[in-house]
Length: 286
Image (tube, rainbow, N blue to C red; front, side):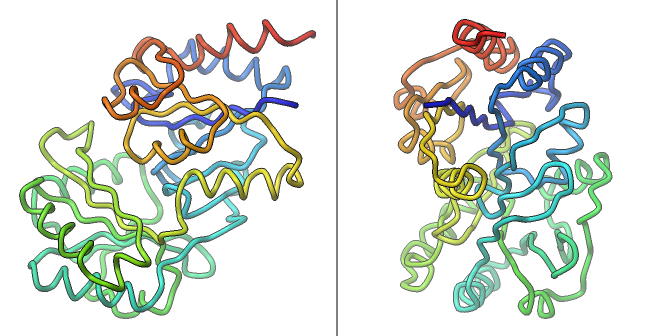
């Protein structure tokens, strides 16, 4: 049985500056060229992932947007899409309106990805907007209204604010019958903009774990593989539970480290690639 290695990006493979170090780039690419089965499972979009990993050549599809998309890394073509249902979208927007908060929405219009917003109401949103501009994210669109987006494939709705603002919204979503049945919701702090939290909303069938299953089905014809995963955040927990072996960097959240089979060096110390170098060449005849 072959091993397939799947790594989270932020806080795991890349450092605190959201950069893949030269050490990790050089050695990871050599291992991939030598036959390492490796890919990414990230909350980021493929647009963002490709910019961060622009010098890396990945032949296996990547998992993006927390499993909302399974995509070809080279062409950006979506091989699988997990969209939000219309009823849930209506409920989410009603709740947002009641709390006086406006979101970012991400999706696919049939031709290209989009990331839309109406206005930026706090520093956390402005930080995200500036980060998107810095990365020249082609998805970004300002709109007067989200109404026309309801006809397209919305895969993610993101609210950005202080924790004390978002927690009551999360509680309301969880108590809503439609939302609780159809949504997967994550609340976490932006590791690059401390003090600002993201409430990320996805289809209940959208997760890194389910996307890994689809990856095995589509890319490997359901041939069993030993799945080894790396992650640091709460959204990695389901793929930890699915995996045959789970690994957390030393900087990972407490819950993740408690769930992991192994703790390695931090993301700033190239922990993932150092581990891969040790394990891959130990078990590989070139």
